[in-house]
Image 1 (spheres, helix red, strand yellow):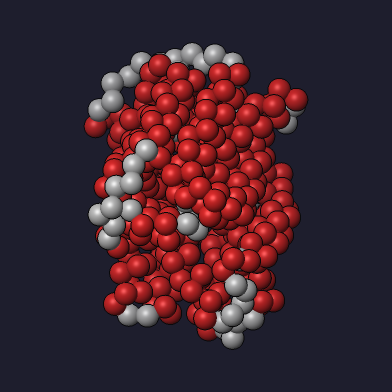
Image 2 (cartoon, rainbow, N blue to C red):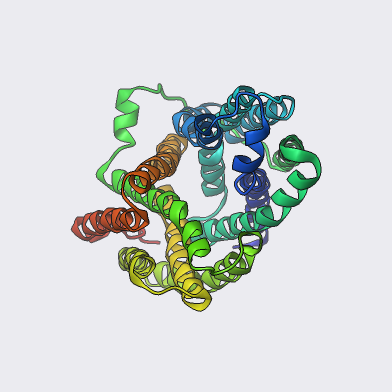
Length: 389
């Protein structure tokens, strides 16, 4: 990437990571501190955690379409403003029902697809996988920081303090967006069944199913992996960053050669197949192995190598496959598939764990990965390899 592309990718990654940092901070503390609110119940606590993903999924396509119609930057500003209002609403209440509404409003700022489209618009085709990998790295850093910062803030000023911190971070993201070059509308087209159908070609459906499957496996897997950590006394929950930090760091080192092979030698299909196989291997180890810290760390690293590689490749493939004038809409469908995968992974994984047992969740994720593997195997090579330079 040239210097202009690097600066732009940095700004986009900062917007994404600052926003995601605020969201991730809630994960280790929400279920503990939300129980102290008025009208608290297990159902409402679950809603407070999960409703964000649902509203994100519902609004990714409209936001993507609007960014095609009116330009990326103004839609980003509107989305962050909605996210800020949701954060303030959740911070100013002691009623969990209002917190749920605030979380739903946070999800209403569905700008992931717009950011991805903006990045694709501004980075040359041959550099998009690198740019997406850079953004993915920043999100990984945000995730690790959130595991440290969230409990510290909540222990001092409560859950409302976390929401105020998230509101402040959203203002920082807004300032970064204002510093981006003004975007222009791409083209006008009517959002209709026909335009949606045109954005659901066989190639794009394959990518949408892929991101859905990837995040379904992630969400379902992370329902039970923390339980494995506790049951096998891998590390105490307050120190779980000792496990996740090296795993994420090593995984980013491991994904570099895979991205290079995919980009330089045009072997995207084979890299995808390899990564899906690595996901399956990791799930089998979690299912069958006698786990200690070293084995868990290695297995988690394998999982993250596969996850991060696919997470970097799929948006790059999508940006090359989708028509430029409808890239925002295609990104919206893609992001909707991602958040639906997270929602259904958490819901189905939790249901399976509740009805059966922990191992059944890993059997479920293995089954999903096998179906996904067969889909990629059956797709013609040209549909999921990068276009000729």
